[in-house]
Image (cartoon, rainbow, N blue to C red; front, side, top):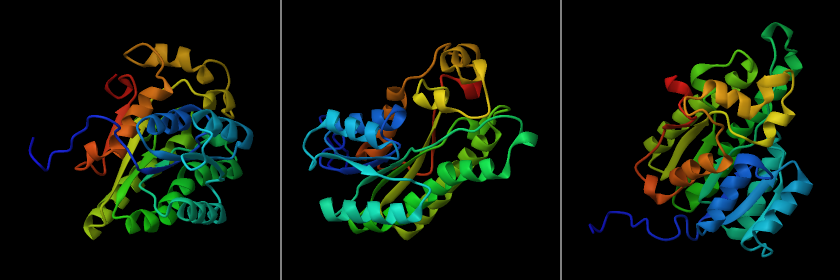
Length: 265
């Protein structure tokens, strides 16, 4: 084997420190679980304290390996405290997964400005703040990987989720812009996005402004996805793991679409 080729056998993120937002359930929890299985020490961050603590304890009772961190991603003071806590516990950060999100749907003409701003504050501002406050610590360690969870709606839009599509489109563009900035600085930080399609997660039961089949993940996927079935959180987590690992050391600024074929439909 050439000495510059990464050997991917064994634990794929062994010894790395990973922070995953929205990690109490769904895609975030699947990412945290998979990274822990692949050797990373993981910080699960969420606003759902009960679920978050349970999830962290289920992964490990050892807080030096896995611990829960309360974090409202839309609040800058929370991010500052979170990064300070990671620095104190581990001294570095290698992987940031900006996954936390929420959904508000319905006709755009009926959407309150307050709800529009609330959607952007979590889904877009939260990603910006995560990048802003985590980058210095990642850079101090010589670089790492930031993976932002966007959505296939960032490419194709959604007549049901207008504000959600707009926020996720912002995440997609922000990802590419920061990837270029980091590459230009030569700081060793790669920035990529995953674009999930219809994934069977709890977010569908918490969507606001829509009802019926629009929030039935299985029915929606069966109707729209060429593969004819709903995706699972683990389907997205494996994509995140690849981008977070050294296997993707020459990958930055990409959209990794995990949607059962929605984009090609």
